[in-house]
Image (cartoon, rainbow, N blue to C red; front, top):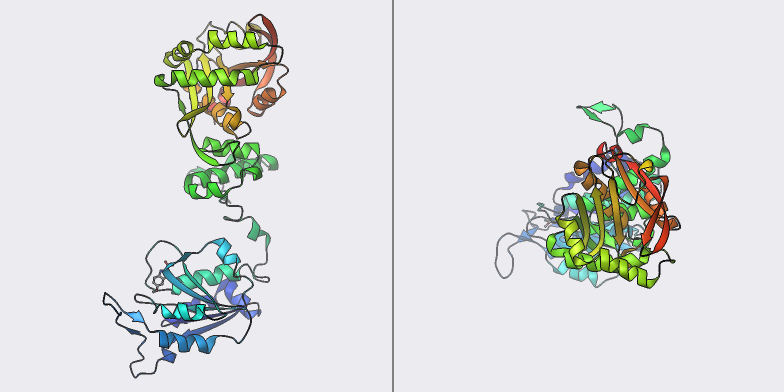
Length: 441
Ligand code: JBZ
């Protein structure tokens, strides 16, 4: 591949003789020509610019000088691109860089002053030469040279023989539209900062999960613009939970939306009661008939009951708010010393349990990661209000999905209990998780 760079400051490109670019040139993989625009001037003062037609500040670079220079360096055949760095160009992306890898020649016209006479781009656009007017971002430069160096490096590194380790090409930022995870090396403590313990523990599955979580977290925090470009179908459940915890969720329609997980407000009792009523039947075991379900909803999930949870000091209620609608909720009961939930046998649990009474998600957001995100948020939220040492919950024995979900979130079976919906007897398992696992995290 041949690059020709034309500028009034050709020394600017001395850097291309260094490092990997220098090696690629020496090995013949890349061929570079650097040219002084003034070589194509015709007057004694070697003038390259003139005042703008129509008036205004600054000077414009002359089309005739540029035309002679470009014609002189253009090769006779192949795929030829005229790249013009300009603040009014299309913003460079990795996709646009990739589209240039099979060009035979890229000629860079690096302007200074207020830019190059617009007829240069227009003229070459009327030939078989591809004109690519581009910007490297929304900040102010004095000329196109720095932007040309950027594109030369971005294209050249994608070509064969440029890098010894082409694996590092695929794993980097912007391939997959997720940012890179943070990297660490020796020393293990620097300026009193420790390398995260998981990285020195040698558990490679755990390391992979941790890195993926950090990568997604960084992407959500630093580059929220990238999230809508991620295909939800390419993400694991854990990936979705991490993104949901950082405010992004894709529901049944696969469109990314912002989600806020926060304590329920008192003015939301009616909306929350409605969500509770619609989600309860989804999770109900099949033996519980519709009448018993309706009775349970009317008795326990009415607006007044829900308002009492929200107002109570020993209940914690979190909701997931997606564009103003409540799509998931959790309700935790905080038991004081000597108190136990009526429906959990004391022998299975430690005193003063933090009891996860409810965790429900709208069917539209099943599998979206929202449940995992609100569940973990509920545990974190409850820690400073807890009196004992254990999170406790009960779930139907036959509900494999729920049991697997709680197991994934650190809960282990500690025993069984009986749970009545109306007069239907349900066998539940009691599951527990030490509060210290969250408090120490
Ligand atoms: C660029 C006229 O030459 C310029 C001036 C500023 C400038 C470029 C070319 S390209 N800024 C950018 O990509 O931000």
